[in-house]
Image (cartoon, rainbow, N blue to C red; front, side, top):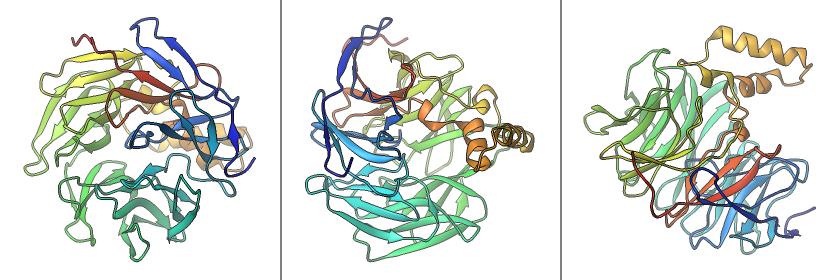
Length: 374
């Protein structure tokens, strides 16, 4: 199997037994496949195709599929990509991470280009609203930092930071600011594009389990989860924190207007929720029934030394060649067992992952027009 290879449609459709929502299953291969990360949309701009990561060739590669029941097409081959890194630029080019470099591919010609090589390990890509700059978490030579550069490849730099970095994102209103998460606490930080004015946005300890922060649509305000208690909002200007709703919101993604927030839930699984930001009322779209693995989600604090030690011991018993990766999967994942829901461009569809059939597959739910908010 190679770049450009075509596969017959694997589409099937059903109704959620509890909500009645129409749910499309787009993949059915007996291997892992999942949409892009919850911070980006998996759909192209006209919603005719959806990009996803599949291991059907033996390693993580980028694919797309005609929505809802078109052929499946392999977009990349060769060395594996970072499975949660792909993101679609405003002009339709797809950016992703392979090894220590940011790459881009045109889905019409399948022509690839290496945008920037940081000679280290990179996390998922995030683009600014205009699609002119990228940012990614980076670790190289034993040092953590932010890899940031121009999408044309003409500029790139490494902004160092003393702790683990996760999920850097551009401010959609002022793209000269980057918000990022650090692990462990305190979690939320921001820094200017050139590395100036680095500051912590919220001081807290490991007992306040802040996760999955992102911007509230096309505003500067931030939303985040205090796991597993509440969904909250922070003012970018004043840093005032207000509570939106009290429930176990997990991975969160707002609509562009910042009026609704989509999220999954676990422990207990209350299904995919759509939350009204103004009132805090929410409605259930469907139930992914994903296994949602990871020991830390059963707790209300970050992983401590004893959690990593237990995970390392379990991994070593399995004689793993990479106990560090297995330990991370045990504590916070594996990520491909999590739904990670995201909106379509018209915000009428939700893409998510579920391993309810035994292998993680790509699903799309149609948001019912008559959702009941409670």
